[in-house]
Amino acid sequence: MKVIDKIRGCVSVSAEEGSCNGTTAPHGNVVFSFEFFPPKTEDGVDNLFERMDRMVVHNPTFCDITWGAGGSTADLTLDIANRMQNMVCVETMMHLTCTNMPVHKIDHALDTIKSNGIQNVLALRGDPPHGQDKFVQVDGGFSCALDLVKHIRDKYGDYFGITVAGYPEAHPDVISPTGLATPEAYQNDLAYLKRKVDAGADLIITQLFYDTDIFLKFVNDCRQIGIKCPIVPGIMPINNYKGFLRMTGFCKTKIPPEIMAALEPIKDNEEAVKAYGIHLGTEMCKKILASGIKTIHLYTLNMEKSALAILMNLGVIEETKVSRSLPWRRPTNVFRVKEDVRPIFWANRPKSYITRTIGWDEYPHGRWGDSRNASYGAPSNHQFMRPRTRDKKLHEEWVVPLNNIDDICEIFSKYALGKLRSNPWSELDGLQPETQIINEQLGTVNLRGFLTINSQPAVNGQKSDSPIVGWGGPGGYVYQKAYLEFFCSGQKLNALVEKCKAFPSLTYLAVNKEGTLISNVSQTDVNAVTWGVFPAKEIIQPTVVDPASFVIWKDEAFEFWTKGWAQLYPETDPSRKVLEQVRNTHFLVSLVDNDYINGDLFAIFKDI
Ligand code: FAD
Image 1: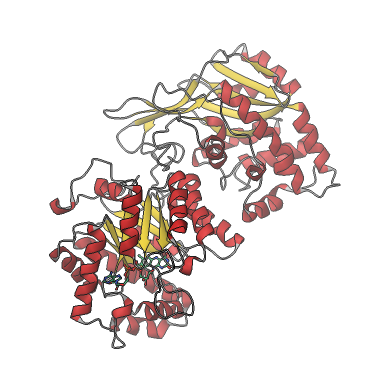
Image 2: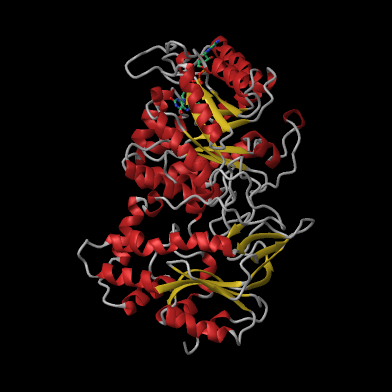
């Protein structure tokens, strides 16, 4: 979706800015966003994605990724933008500059993000390449952001939302050594900004500033000359004294004397500088919000604490109150925004699910949507590779000597009790919050040889804004059937199947590595295991158990015994054999208790 449409939907904009399109505002009516830049190392990229995952939980309206100076990070920026939109599932805006970019390269970048379902570009001229003073247009390229905006509109019509840069103190090129632009240069800059908007830009993000009055005057001046689109203030929390001086020096930003006076005595104390940065950022945002502007763009410098602390101070986000629009993170890719039904099997592996379903013509959608689709992509090798940080955690927690199945039960039980954070079958950090409702029972069944990899407790009409099981926003009620997915031996499965005869509310699907399927349901029956009832809406049923997808999922699930876990051990380690043995002899079982009111899913495991 275009960021401008989200902003117009969230903020009750003034009449001149357009009308609200009825989209629900996630944070009262304050819109906030986070900017990141491409890290230099692979580890840095891994860490950035972990950080983004944590930050995106707070529902920013969008996140953006910069284009390295001179196009130096083109491929990485394109890759990160793709992963942000499609794996992190946050509305993504990619920066794009004209520096060193002939038009075919620009089009390649735009075609790439378009095919990846991204609809937002921040169109920039860029700075001169390293070692050059003046911006020189590359052969076959553009000389300024205005030309880039025109080109995007000419070639791509209305597909992209286009954002441009605005400079409250005028562009640094026209700021003299005294620190000020002449009134004429400032007015020229404004007039040029208006041309960028008139050419098709629909949003302005400003350069960083530390004098809020300058920003407010700039907005007023823009309005005076007829710039009507939202102007989003770019806020850069001060994290570090030297970095702050470097950045403001480079951008020729005015620093009010009281800020220098506050920093001077604490400049060598990084923690104190950070705390002051949070205080200052909070006060600046308060003043901006009080003026009626309801958008805040945070230059995070790839750090999370200060940006989140400012938003918490403003009451825009709450650590304990994270709202989910669905039990799983809703996709932002323009091609799959309607998707609202998923098989439960990938609940802990959402990125894998997205990868395996990329390019479907249609995604399961709606109460009567068909969740089955024959065209799941094959699990690829990279799906079993984890970011290095996670791999390290798995090494620490899961690479222990394994002599027999009891050792395996022990480690699964520890995970279910929340004593470990990593798990070869999960992309997530730790258990889902709702698991705390049943983790004692999970701990016990794991010790009995039912090695759980997915679960959910029964829920019978809890408020949809419940912090643990809620989703879909306030005003509704959510329901779910108790669900358990585990590996167990053939012998245990036989005992379970026998006992199920006395528990008519239980339905199960079991399959071994070879594909032998045992179940007490029809292979065409799809079982809704999570649903919600909301005011003036159809019933929403976002999670289902369906046999067709289960058979697809099992290949991935079985592979984790070897590729996900055994391969973490040295090649000759006997633990590998124990794990392979389990993979070859165990069944993967999906068990639902359909009595979500009086059922007790764990009762069946007694005495097995
Ligand atoms: P332009 O809009 O083209 O303007 C630059 C200056 O030239 C202005 O003073 C303008 O008035 C003047 N000008 C240009 N053309 C004309 C004309 N035809 N007539 C009159 N005046 C004209 N840099 C990166 O390398 N990567 C990034 O990801 C990046 N992200 C940024 C994000 C934001 C929000 C901001 C504010 C800056 C960002 N920059 C980035 C820096 C930016 O590239 C530089 O500031 C660059 O020098 C100017 O880019 P621009 O798009 O503002 O240029």
